[in-house]
Amino acid sequence: MATATDIESVYVRQDVFNARMDRMEMLLEKTITEIKADNEKSRTELKAEIKMLDERINSVNARVDSVQTTVYWGFTVLTLFLALTTFAPALLEFIKGLRKPQLTAEDVQNMIDAAISKLPKLSS
Image (tube, rainbow, N blue to C red; front, side):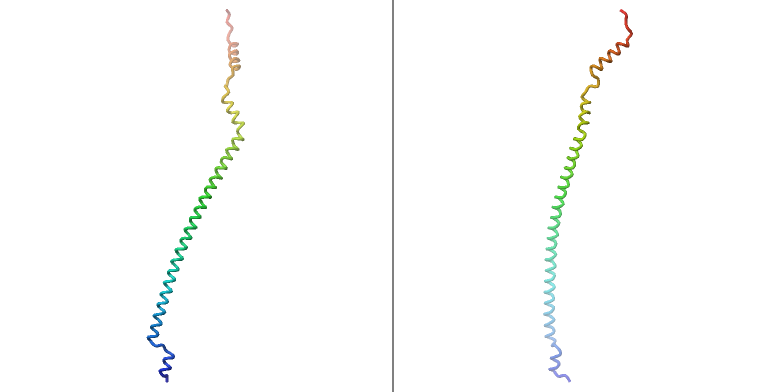
């Protein structure tokens, strides 16, 4: 048979058990509260880092857009310069042709002489 001493060495008294369970619940709640606080802190820090990275990416995008526009304008100016130097002689000849009269005085004189020579000779 089991004696009282044997029972006390095998089993825990109800009040000791309840005290230990209360302490474990308190520690568990404290641990859960700390974990939640750490999670919230991590989320806040992560959001701040994401926002900072987003700002950096936007800054880099703006710089790339600026460089891209500069390169496009450079190609445009270079193309215009090459086109003008290539077609400059032809353009100058065309402009000179516009400024030159179509008929010269010699051409007019030749036409008048030809018209006079075709007229019947009048006898005076």
